[in-house]
Length: 311
Length: 191
Image 1 (cartoon, rainbow over the protein chains, first blue to last red):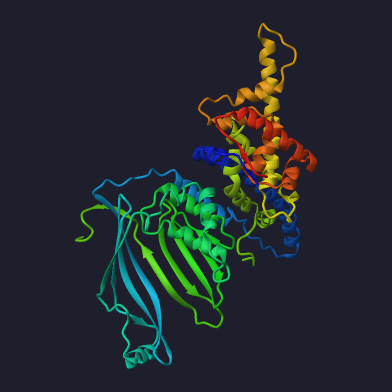
Image 2: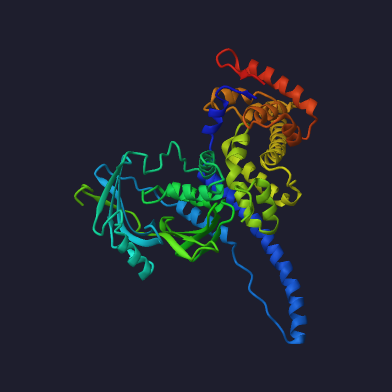
């Protein structure tokens, strides 16, 4: 092993310009689409011949070719988001993100195990220096079955948070907001930084850890467009994801096999801004009833003024 | 979903044989590194063009990728070395043509002049400027070993040269780098 003193630092400073990277990516995409066009035209000849044969026997059934592979649509969203201007916060302003969430809580009241879904509303204020205040107001628990509700009430247990409870949490700078010194907005470097921090894979697959930690960087924190774009690019590289989308929303689905269950995570992003719009976790193991254990729906972050403590 | 926790480059490339767009994942992982390698010898705009060329070539040749090599970086850097070599030759030809067209009709101009000129950016850090004084072959082995941490066999494979040549060229490159860097900035090596 050898090291040229300072060489690594010197080279790290030489990062490709985003415009250069976008241009290079466009050249690669052109090459990819060229192969697809070539493949598609070859296929078209073959299909045409097949159509003639099938028509002769009176059975013609062709499906249109997919226009774009799914991951490409996510990368296109990332490219569009990367061009959005950053809107830095003034000192007296905050990014406010409102959300509604539903969390499945399972308690064992002797027998049987009882589950209920508890809704909550969250408001997250992020200040210019990154300090964050999170206010959560809990709603009335919803039991999955009448038997669950009966068992729960007979047990004398109470939910951790009664309906109407409000909890306020405060986080320091870079605790809730991604620290740019740690999480760069250059996708390859961001991916490396995330991969370096993955935990053991025996409890949670690395792909799932990568997906979760990437989403965390842009959830409810008014992250800059450059970071949102980088996160979407990292997500596009996570093996096993499925992507579907419309012109307004793009959805990433991932089925993760954990030691005790298989779960499906679904993340939906705004296709024009890259903001996280909703997310959910559903247990899909064969030996479990199909249950969504967590879901959240986010409003787009807005800039507000005023003290979040009294807002 | 495959059983590998994190898909290697090889797995991504093999997947791209049938799903070409997957190859963009390789681009996302390694574009910065390939660019940095090239930018050590060429101006930024040229380096960006060459890096793009590397990935277009890599995409075209992806079916020849050996799946037993998990990381695609040596393969990509090997292509970057070739692209850089071609660019250097073009630059040298242009340099010769320029000199011939001037009043001083010198016959043959060493390609080293062109190589040195292309990195004469005064704003570049001192160490990189010194590395620009190495020959292209010396630069390649030294940067692949020191910056990209490739093993000797990987360097041999990347550059298409025997293992013994890697060792001798690396020794020469280190010696030359020490001379070029001078007493102000030291070069540390323990390998």
